[in-house]
Amino acid sequence: MSNLEAEWLQQARQGSDEAFEHLVEHYQTPVYNLCYRMLGNPQEAEDAAQESFWRAYQALQRYDPQRSFATWLLSIAAHYCIDQQRRRRTTSIPIDDAIEEIFPDHAPDPETATMVSEQDKQLHRLLAALNPEDRAVLVLRYWYDLSDAEIGQTLSMSTSAVKSRLHRARLQLARNWRASVSEATRAERKCHESPAF
Amino acid sequence: MNHQPFENWILDDNEPSYEEQRNLQDHLAICPECNQLHENWQHIRFAFKQTTPAAPRQGFTKRWKENLAARRALQQQQTRRLLLFLVSGSLLVLLAFIIYLAINISLVNLIGSLLEGLAYFIVVMNRIQHISAILPTLPRVIPPGLWILISTSASTLSLLWVFSIWKISTKGVTPK
Image (cartoon, rainbow over all chains, first blue to last red; front, side, top):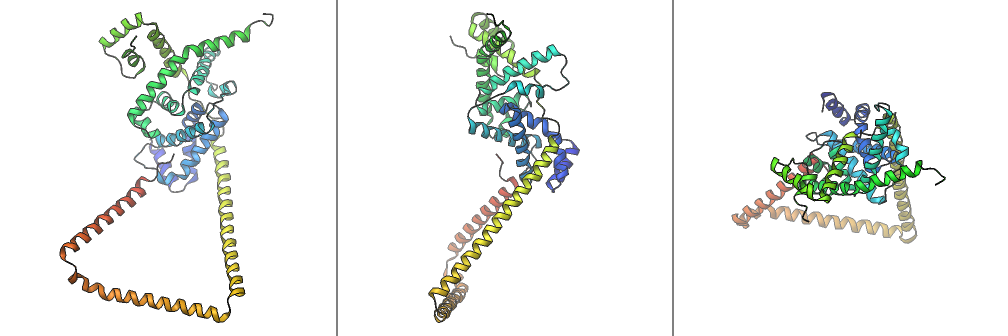
């Protein structure tokens, strides 16, 4: 954490809304990305990210400064998203509506962007099939580069539980990858084939 | 066919040793299932590396500020409602009590009840005085061993109490 962030955090803990706004500005993308990867829907991700910041704002006095603020914030967001997932049980992912938001203007070129977006769609489909805790473990590992111990701390589980969840989630993803690719190719072919056939 | 430990070598983070990698390559050459798993996992790892973090729509912080104001207003409204409910509830109970007294109890009975309450209070105070008088004689009556036991237990309980207060105040409750 930089000195500036530490200062914002201290001021926010003393009741400065402006300092907390700086923290929101600074951490909006990591929190939103986690919510988006967990929930798969831009609107739900926005609501979840706002709710996570609200919960953090309310619990700021209980935050332990010895702990990383980012991990603490992600922990709040991850727990909230897991709860949401458990509540609704089913996952709906309107990927096509969301894709513009995932790939902002800095996409290298149309061809690469299309390939990457296709991969992203596939990843989303595969992640949606995992249970919420396994999904959270994978998201924290691959989008946030957290270690097993940090993931354990974030999701309130032991390091061995993280390891076994990671293994199970990777196995499930790898097994479902081929089916997902075939499905995507079939869908694309169907989309481009002549109506005469 | 037994796919262990090859499955672990394919999926886990730990880099297999040179020997393990050679064994894995030999196994992949004869096991289509593990070969497929290996290939798929490589695709997924590549996909993970390629995807960029999703960013929220422009104006997230502005929406946060609006959200914060709305939530605060809601909280204040809820607090006002709760306060109104408690005050009006208390007033209603008081009113009901006064009406009950006016209907059922005459003034003489009311004064009698008050005097009865006062007498009870005096009795309680007397007993407290008696106990206070006995307390100074206790050290001579209770053996030293029992005193040590009592003071040790009291100290242990106090320490436990102080420790739990400290733990709750410093660690807090981990938010879910």
